[in-house]
Image (tube, rainbow, N blue to C red; front, side, top):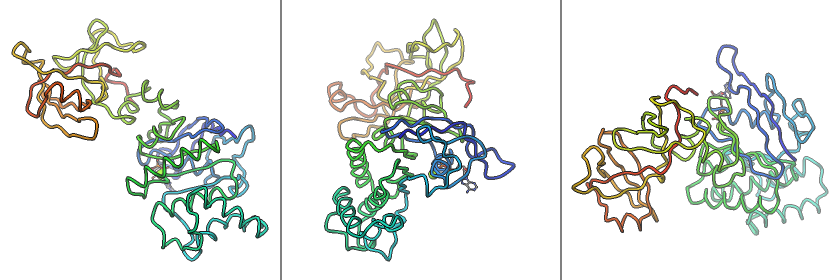
Length: 356
Ligand code: ADP
Ligand code: MG
């Protein structure tokens, strides 16, 4: 079932700017759609309105073509998982998972079979008689998923569900979510501030900034064609280099130039900011013929698995982060302290006074 949010606005106080302002997006049926944005950008408020836990000041929430804006939460048929496990401490895992089934007066035998099925689904077979305190963080969060799925929800709403977990468990659980999703295709709305998590699990991303939708699209659209400087900087990370348009290219600093991708219209002479991804820079070693102004110094190198993260200082003093495959760095023989030349493969270019 698809979810459509139309022109949602929600204020918590009369004076301040709204927490959520004119938010519209569609979450296609059977996909994972992610609300991605920094803390305070309004993600949880949107999710809570979709859940029926908050009433909007204006706007609509549609499930398929049914308007559910005023339908009470308990009649929306949704499963929730939040960051804190919110399990019942005094109940066993089985009882926690069966909670929603009990509320719905599901017959005992049917409920028992359903819980067995869910325990297997979240890979907790054999742990049904434990109490939450006897489980690891990752296991507890899987109980929360099982409990949300027990009522066979029409849609799954997840608010930073991996937020409280260690890095490794986090990655395992989000891989599990993606695999679960690929088998069951349950329409899912995920909230996260973590862009890597969003890019890894989502089909669609809705980037939120200060209560508004900055951009909505597929993961690749948002990453490859950011609509605003905020999106360019927040999703994927980028060096922001000041430059000027000259003959349809951007001159960055005194020494670097990059072609402007199609569709960027900035007049010659315009001051622009070029957003350059760390992996869109390649380096060569400077030699005796390299003009001083074109040379950048390698200040630090961090060897991270298969790639190297280099912190450069450009000739005008501006910093730049570059990521290159370890094998290329080794082949070039680049070391800390070396002078190098940077070549920009690509940049997202925005006229400087662009504001959002
Ligand atoms: P996010 O989930 O992106 O971190 P929230 O939706 O929680 O953002 O919050 C958006 C804004 O609304 C924030 O400024 C927050 O302080 C405010 N806000 C959220 N919930 C309430 C509330 N119950 N009462 C007052 N202000 C709230
Ligand atoms: Mg939140």
